[in-house]
Image (cartoon, rainbow, N blue to C red):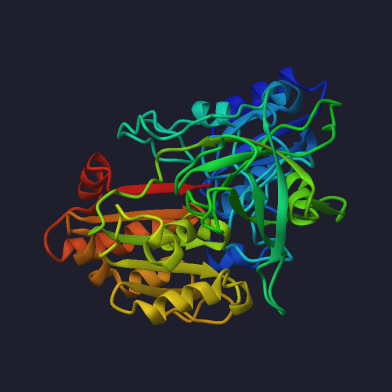
Length: 448
């Protein structure tokens, strides 16, 4: 909730810098915000640098876009926490003016959000680990990633840390966006055979870009979801893969084009280049061990990364041959939001699985700039969920069903609204039922 007293206090005590950082939540994905060119994300926490003499004006603009200012701090006060390591599947938080995958040049279906030219948005990267621990909701849960309640003691975590990263090598760096698509998204494969970097599906790794930040200190790591199975794309236990989108947006005051430091570094790496890797981290997005489980996946943009790992483990022939103890027999449904058809990442892979396993896999795209929702607006992922809400609800009620949501937090409200309506038809309160799903470790969320 916006607190005018807090604003006045900050203005009175920090006038020396005259630059303030607003933390804003609730910027929704809507027809109104879809038309703006402001480089701010449509959902989740975003951080906006504001000169003192524009504070009131910026407050009014944020309110018009449906946002709520939850904190205001001087830029100098925030410098100690800039760019720290992250735990969730989001972006670097206190560097680079906050943005989304949809700016004047891209669509709001994807990942990330930085705040100054030295940090990254996910698809991009994730929020600093320490910041995620601080950014808690009223119940104490982190704001970017649901808390993993189940103990996974056998899951590898933090094998390599920032002060002693693993040095991998780029094997390949291939474009994923087809001609006519929006932005640059790359599939990168790294050689990790020289170390002991083990991971499983649903985890993330950190990347430390070379060089110094604006303060002359070494760049901090950014987290990216792993897009390959534990055996790697070559199914030889020697590689790890990422799906990365280059951050690009126009500075709101200078109109200068700003590029993300780490995402740009990764997107243009040549084979043979060394890469500093940390991790792995994350236990919230792990697949169930039950081969008869049903898996609902809702992803936007590069939120497809963990979903690709799941699908490879479930359906790829070579991967299945390497997992004699795991033979998937359940049902997987991917609802995938992108701006244009050329932005359907891993399109050929997804269609191949759908063709080969029509009874076990279903692909439902939401292509916002090409498809219309029932109201005549753009077709976002939440519109697809509303369209199939009754069917999804019946599947979710199955005790073997797990739901995974990865991408922009803005889709969550629409997903909840659609399932609220479907559940109400049977006299069930969705919010209460969802709590039961989380307690049973069947509702997995990683949004930003």
